[in-house]
Length: 385
Image (cartoon, rainbow, N blue to C red; front, side, top):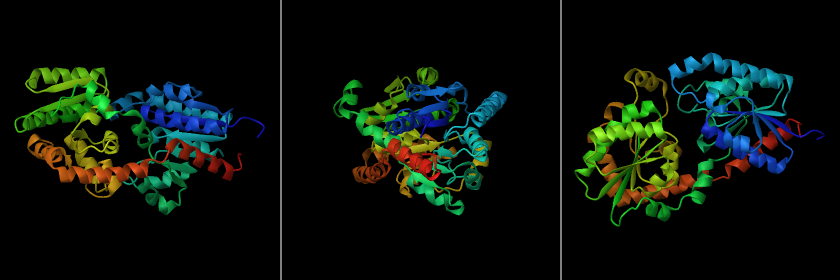
């Protein structure tokens, strides 16, 4: 090929920056002169991606915040689409953020540019008809989970299961004994990790029920320590104020970040539903999963969701491995006994460890390399290389 391979790529948040940077790194092994540009964070930029727009401006959560930023987001997307139409890359990759990237992919595919979407939207949970829009927008979907491909069968979507980078990285980065030493875990002390989520809205609905559950447990179990990793300084301040005001009687250690180490030292985890439950699964930790939101929002979502489960360990096993406690049931009288069972039932703990090991093995695929292989295969079939 006379000119270097040129790829357009857009990631919208930190998790996408991780995926995008890993994929770029693996592609550069095959194409040392690779040219990459679009929108990326620090990790993608470090791999040589030229970012035309600050990625953090795309990382918007919540309806009100999105509406407030909508003109800016639409302008950024429109400008980038026009740029790539005038300067066509050999391939365009949208990394997650489907509300932003799928629209780009549709326009660029229509313009004759091969397109890839990295991370399947949750078509298995809700809005299943999105598979038709995805088929129209993309030549290839790279999926993180093995159960996703069957949901695309009606459109015969080209899809490649690549595994999950968390499953590749965790064994290399977590030293449980070192983490226990770092947190000064005493002999015989039992640790309950509390992860009420990283968003302000999650803390609003989950922080107090989780802390009330900590109080419920501390009244029934001796030698308990509760450790809460705050996602950032703002969440730390919110939690610190709440603990100081209402829960200073409990043995609680509040830290900033370090969620993986906190989970590693835990005997059991009380956790908000989300990607962190996958991390807990790979670490093979018993957990109780909970989620709560505004009543009206829950009423709408509960009618749209068709999946049997909400937590990743249960979805991946296709059976209930861990308790899922939702909405009005999120109270200490329900959460407490579930956490207590996970803390004390050794037969249950052993069963979970076996099941979680199977899930880990399934997801441990060297995701960066498999994603790169799937992209290369598409480029070959398209006659680009």
